[in-house]
Amino acid sequence: MQILNFFLIIFHGKILVHILSFMFEKIIHYLSYDYTIQKMSCLKKSFHIFLIVCLVFKKTIIGCMQVGFIPIAFLYTTTMYDCMIKVAINGYGTIGKRVADAVAAQKDMKVIGVSKTRPNAEAFVAKQRGYPLYIADLSKKAAFEKAGLSVAGSVEDMCKAADVIVDATPGDVGATNKPLYEKLGKKALWQGGEGHEIAGFSFNSSCNYKDAIGRQFVRVVSCNTTGLCRIIHEIDKEYGVAHVHAIMVRRGSDPGEIKKGPIDAVVLDPVSVPSHHGPDVLTVLPHISITTMAMIVPTTMMHMHAIQITTKKPVSRDRVIDLIKNHPRLGLIKKTLGIKSTAELKEFAMDLGRQRSDLWENCIFEESIYANKNELCFFQAIHQEADVVVENIDAIRAMVGLEKDATKSILTTNGAIGLNLIQNNH
Ligand code: NAD
Image (cartoon, rainbow, N blue to C red; front, side, top):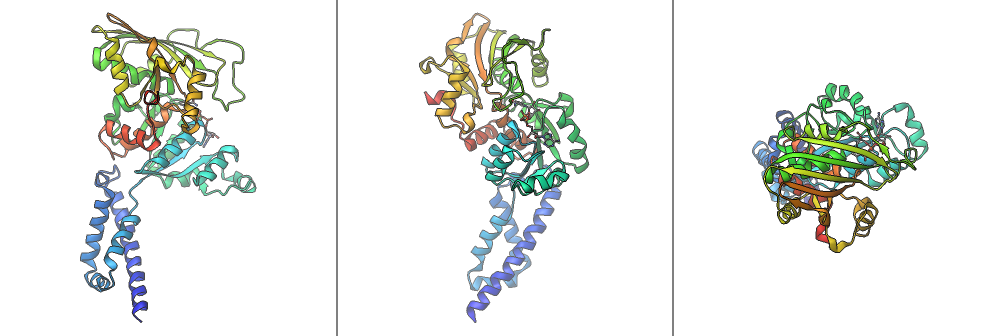
């Protein structure tokens, strides 16, 4: 009989906790769309809920105490209260699949779904990772299911369930999704393939994290712009930047893009000066004077930048090296490594066991750093598929207002994905 009572109490207690957790989640969510309340830790919130349970249902609780229910209920409430940021990834391709894994690695966010247009290899990766799969066109559901991929619903269903949507669809497709995000009143962030006007705010964690706090829409700038902004901002803080001249030698396509070229040409992209990169840097750092030129070459590995910065104050090579070493997203390729190319860099990243051999940090070649009076020159390699991924994670955190401090967010993101800067590996 005592055992029966025990189970009855647990059963009632569980239902109680379920109902209350659900109610409080809704109330808290409603009161704090921008997650001001989420500043409290999960435990604190759960404790509050637990106290209210105690006050409202004193009698049940006293009864439960006799069988030691309180610790069980407390633990149960703690696990029930879901205070992680729910992230949907619309467009599970080169960038989307990486962002999804980076989100899944964070303690304060989780992937609630990813979207695909067709049942290809990436869809199977999503299944293997356990990400619910949503599809843009529900008429293709049968094709997915025939391939052994279960479909959780439409892109709209996925967006409804999310707090933040990371739009990683191809450039210009993302813009067509904006009306949906607006209709649902959801926060969304786009990638650099979209123009600045899509969100009216272009983001880089190291430069303008604070300005992203609480925003509904954000655009994470492109891979090249991200690499430029990180280092230009750092030099600007220390010496003041009078002018930047940067030449981008860009990869022709990503490794998986079999239909793109060139296969035997150096293509000026564009022939005219400046390339779009300079104006794009200005969307993040509007006060910087910058001219950029770009060309595309037959490689898939990484971009290479040749950068020349004229500073307002005389620049010291040693100090620049220190600035790079102390920055959480700037990597230094030391002479001792003996690496002179993007191919060797990617090989090194692979040997280090980095997921997908990703290089999330700028890879600045120490030997190329030249400082003379007010002139600073160097080469940096940028892994186009990776550097923006970590920026997406910080942007999510800023948009929901969960972390107000840029450095804390950057370190949390880096720590969760295991970013041990390249200079610490040689
Ligand atoms: P991608 O083509 O590799 O992936 C896009 C994914 O979106 C594909 O899986 C595609 O099936 C899916 N998709 C297409 N239309 C869709 C729709 N209507 N709804 C849902 N999903 C749809 O593209 P990517 O390289 O990952 O680029 C995504 C964005 O990131 C672009 O804005 C791009 O400019 C930017 N970006 C790309 C790189 C890079 O090097 N690949 C670097 C930085 C930024």
